[in-house]
Image (cartoon, rainbow, N blue to C red; front, side, top):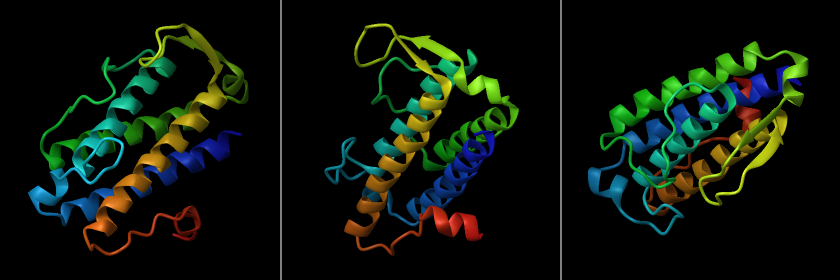
Length: 163
């Protein structure tokens, strides 16, 4: 199971770099334009992903900052957001590399931001959710990019595995 989650952390890092590279080619207006995604713009969607990952990493590790709202904008500049994204992705790479087989069964208790009811989840399920959540919202940014007439970004996991 550890190798599987290490692969997902590596893929996550690879895909995020590709989507950030594509967003760097947008004008400031295109980057910030509300294109109807759940969080509106590429800017707000990428910020949301960082917010969510910080919340999950805080729950899992007990370390780091954890915003209390899912739509907060942590960074106004794409370059600053990218730097923070790279650091968080590295935390996931290090986390998945450090886990023992028994760690995936560890139960984590927390209170969700969206519903103030305490819950418990096994770590493996939490990590699966985190990486799936990243894929979901990266797909929204991909749609924003293509709706702006930009070239499609290859984000297929098989392409990552072939690299």
